[in-house]
Length: 341
Length: 253
Image (cartoon, rainbow over all chains, first blue to last red):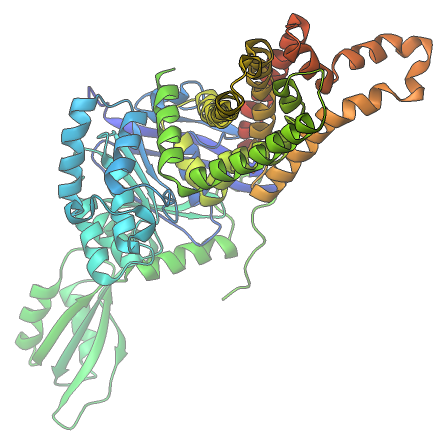
């Protein structure tokens, strides 16, 4: 592709409502070239709607979307040239063969014939579909169909690839393959994935946007999000020694280090403690040095961080309980609130 | 407009490898063959005034009623249901190219089916050994009528498919509209309500639009450009509405 600008996707104040229901409520975000962004959100949060608006399929009610600098609403064909899209449930025509389908899609995306032939071979190799190139799409297994969908999305080497739930329904092997495929695209194309499979998003994405009720409730890299939502790191240790004196010792190691739980001592003298600190940096070495120096024997030390699932649950619950700080008026009703968990 | 040819060639290829195309063609020829034989039966009993070709085209509404809805109902309705319309419209094609491509493919198939009935006349000529049976006048006029009216009928079928998700609804809708067009205009033009002075222009307009009378005109060699104009503008209108309908359904989904 020719010159791809640094910011490939720019969404500003996007609003989309279906009648009285506001599916996307003043959404704004940007995506840089080569970044892999994950869109997380409960069902009905507005992820698919946002993706459809980005591809130019659905028109929005207000706001602007720019793909590679061009507004999608006024330049539909130019922006669609920069987008590769795989919708939810990966719809494919049943009667065509894999290579025929890729040829058709490539011609629709205006690839010249000679280049297309070579590119189809390349893409089939990349997605490990060479054995299946003459099989009929309706007869393929689900994993192979997903691979065809991804092959089709990357076929024209677009600047932006948008995939709605690419790993849904796949077995662990296939998920790994898809995950590697997506990771290979980093640096060259901007990729937006939406998924419910949180470990997936944690592994592949550079940045995560958590959407709820049509608004972004949290955004940042997975590490930043953990820190922002939870703001602490937890250490588990198994130590033997004076349980009572531990609390006094901790502030010397680090001011915000404190005991969360302390198990009673097991027969062999060791007990498990959970410590928490607000510091992001790794305290493992300091703890391992200071505890034995104070007379404790340390058998195990581990650092646990809240998983993205915890972040997700906390972030999406947060917006049900408390409205966002800017207290903007909702245009129309957002989804009816779920019962408080 | 180059995507139009991509879509057209894709649709034609789809028609060629789909077994239902050939089944439909065989059944069509079966039905038309029976009709033709029935017409010839009349000729063997008593001499008729009109050539068999002209009588044959008077039964044009049979394939229109049962073939056009079946050819066109899956155009958009099936793609909507499968979800492939979404993937199609997110490529740099315009809705107009998609509609026109599908329309052209359906129209070409319709013309191919009718073209294969030329064989009937040739077989008749071969066995009757009488040059009068291959009379070019009614044949050219009749097939011209089929070509021109086919534009309108197929575009109505595409319109019906473009406005719904369900193939059944699309089929029934196009059948109903075609029935209303072919049979209904004659009925409406004869209503007594239209005998009042103010409605006389409407009544005369409706009388010229009676499609069965067009068949007679064409097979007798009268090519009335007003009638051709009616079909052309009707099909253009239906296609414009199809394009708008596809976009409107997305807007209001």
